[in-house]
Every structure is written in structure tokens, then in C-alpha cells.
Image (cartoon, rainbow, N blue to C red; front, side):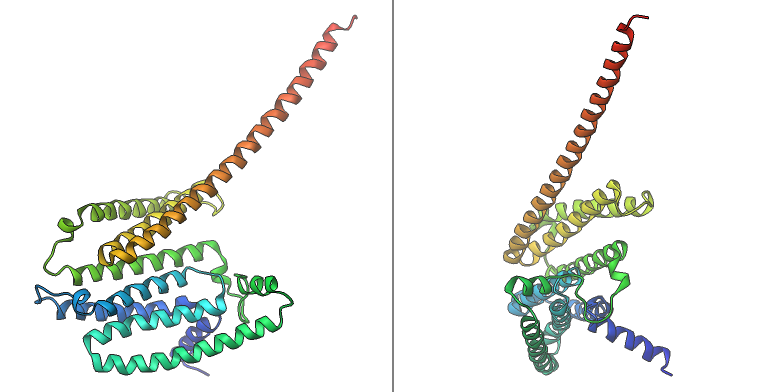
Length: 313
């Protein structure tokens, strides 16, 4: 009979195999937090240089992999591929930091990561090839590939619920914001971001306040069903404000990547506004239809009453 520690390890490994990459978040977040603290210590007495200047390519790759890792944790589509993308991007992030802290150790671990990447890429190719062979058409192939309910063998009940998915999504966003704030401390050792990026930082503070307020109201005041309008509106507000806060931090650290993510965020905002407008139009049409039916029924009743009054006794 396995020990509790072995049982926990088995559960974690089964979560990864079943397409649940969130089990990797604690270990990767721990490693990233430790390495970012060490980087802050390493560059605390360096006044004219930062890792974004001395190791520009590595830091750009680190920010990009962190974004990919967080997005993959929030994605339920293509689980056969997304689980591997999450594992690869999450493991590459601390390796990139190790390349700055201890280059020799970082290169050694990077070689192991590349070998593992080749193995996962080959396994993914075999799975896609098998999926293509079992599909009768291209449309059927993409339908199977994009099916969010297509898990490996086990149906994950926890992630199927909306509340659990929402909790995981916000945990990923908070993790990403914490990592980017730690990078901000490393980058601005001798500079003040409130002076060099005053507008962006002020907008970030506002977005963080809106996110915190919306999340608090949703948790504390509206303990009601997930399908209520209050719950849906507050969930959209918190998601948009948290993602905007993330984009603003990326805009300070890596302006080129930040502008691209801001464009993606703007398109996502327009999509949410369009979806909300569609729902509002449907609600307006339903209300108008109900009013018309009510007026017709009321008119028929009034007409019948007039006929009864006009009849002779």
C-alpha cells in the first residue's frame, strides 16, 4: 500500500496525464519565486545594469513563456496538446532564470529540457497522426481536436464545474501578476517606474482596484447561482480588469510584447462587448414580445367586455 507522499505524487502525475496542467503550478511558482528573489539579490547593487539589458534575449523569452504558461492553464481546448504546452512553458521559465543565475547549471538543465521537448513533440505528432487516421474528413479532425470535452481517459469532475474553472483562472492571473511585479523590482533597481511610466502604473493601480472590488463583491455579496446576471457581469469585469493589469505590466517590462498583448486584449474586450450587446438584444426582443402578447390579450379582453356591455338585456 503506497504512503501518503507516494499517493500524492501519483495524483499529481495523473493530473498531468489527464490534461490537468494546474497541478504543475505550485512547483513552478515556487521555483520562479526563489529564482526571482535570487536575481533581485544579484542585481541589487548594480545601478546601471539590469537583466533586461545584460540578458535581453533570455528575459524576453522568460516573459513570453510565462504568458504562454498562464494562458495554457486557462485553456480547455485541445487538451492533448495544451497539457504539453503548459508543461514545457512552465518548466522552461525557471530554466531561463537559472541561465542567468548559474549559467553552467542552466545549460545542463536546458539540454535535458530540449531532449524532453523532442520526446513530447514526437508523442504529439503520433497522437495527431492517429487522430487524423480515425477521422473521415478534415472538419471531423478539427472537431475532435478542438473538442474541450475530449479528455484522455478520465473525466475531470472538478474542472467541469464553472466555479472551479473560475477559481483556477483567477489563480493563474494572480500568479502571473505576482511574477511580473517581481520582474518589475528586478528591472527598476535604480529607476522609479512611477516617474518613467506614470500613466501605465496609475492605470495598473486602477485596474487592480477594480479587479479586487469586483472579486470581493462577487464572493461576499452575491452568493448566488453562476447563471445570475450579477454573477456573469462581475465575472467579466474581474476577468477584464485582471488581464488588463497583466498587460500593463508587460507593457512596462517589454514594450513591443506589451503592445501586442494590449491589441489582443482590446480585441477580446470588443468581443465581450459584442456578446453582451447580442444578449441585450435578445433580452429586449423577449421583453418586447412579452409586452406585445400581453397587449393583445388585454385588447381581446377589453373588446369582449365591450361586446358584453353593448348586448341588450
